[in-house]
Picture (cartoon, rainbow, N blue to C red):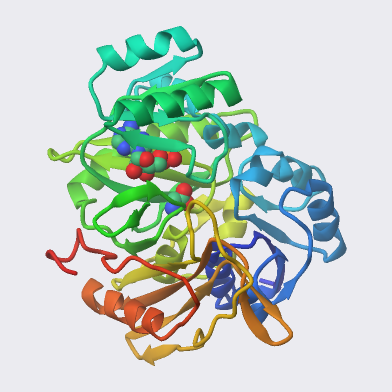
Amino acid sequence: MAMMQVLIVGSGGREHALAIALSLSPSVGSIHAAPGNAGTAMLGTNHQVDVSDIDGLVSLAQNIHAELVIVGPEGPLVAGISDRLREIGIPSFGPGSEGAMLEGSKIHAKDIMKKLDIPTGDVTKLDRYSDIGLFLNSNPPPWVIKRDVLAAGKGVVVTSEIEVASKFIYDSVEVDGFVIVEEFLQGEEASLLVLMDESGYVCLPPSQDHKRILNGDKGPNTGGMGAYAPAPVVTPSVHMRVLDEIVEPMHHYLRNQQDPYRGVLYVGLMIDSNGAPSVVEYNVRFGDPETQVTLPLVEDDLGEILLAAATGNLASLSPSFSDSHSATVVLASQGYPESSQTGREIFGADLEIDEGTSRGYVNFAGTSMEEGRLISSGGRVLAATGIAPNLAQAVDIAYQIIDSISLEGSHFRTDIGYRALSPKK
Ligand code: AMP
Ligand code: GLY
């Protein structure tokens, strides 16, 4: 295969993880990122085009003769970047705008699940202030309240406090005209990234994200504070049920659309105490930080795999996965998730560990290089990733790296992987 020019759209830890895996892919010649970050700049060329500038991104792909575009965040997918790229013959990894509505509208996703009889919580739409009190009084807590807008994981409140619930509902109805309230699902969460196109699908090793800001899954939701893979909550029998009850019907539906889904379907799962899975949410992109722990377990050429999915040829490949375990710990800026202090220098982020079967490195996220100095530029600044023969070692490597980094006011969780490791930290 000729060496491809690849363009990655986005600037997070996920995009650096993609760049790392692509830099190890024999099929990939050069890597470009828009806008990228300090990590992608080390592996290729960053271009200052914003992810909301669809015209600019399409022109960039043409100008650099991109042979594959990989779209990290959901925004440009919902805005139709893949449709535009396909029209001009550039393969794009990521669904067209219609497929992207699975993430663009939670109500749309629920309607499809209902139609396909896929297990998920019931949902109620509230759009009249007069219904709010009655709803909260007649449905027991905890309440799961979601704005039906793209909110980077922050438009969701799960609470048992009636004042918090009613304020969030009122505020959301005021801004958006309506809000949705979902049935509370009990159990343990897992994330399954499924590569798919009209020819077939491939499940990557399941992972578990840590969405809350504080240890023990306390405090507000974030974009994700750490992750590990594989997630043992997805036992072989749970995996079988997820395939039968969720992945197969979704794939059958998506492959038969006029514009078949090509990209990754992120299935956010809740597994109850009997091993029964249900869908918490779909995303139409790789997860962040799930990507940081999932891609290192893919043993084959990622460039070739993503190109196959982008061109409808995924069934021609059968990727293999390593037996290793991986863990990643996110370092967040002071104030995150409510706000973030940026523009501070980061020290010590260059530790790499390579001990044969165990390795570790930094995935850069909200960072940039300014006059040779590494500067924080976002809420989630970086993630330290460890890969090792078992999870405890992978977690240790990730913490060894995170402990060597200093950034004023930054914070991280100290219990990543705790559900899979016997009670720890
Ligand atoms: P979402 O953006 O829909 O994934 O929601 C963010 C997080 O809120 C999820 O990862 C869960 O931790 C929690 N959550 C969302 N929906 C539910 C639900 N129906 N039941 C329980 N927890 C939920
Ligand atoms: N880590 C959660 C997400 O990417 O949506």
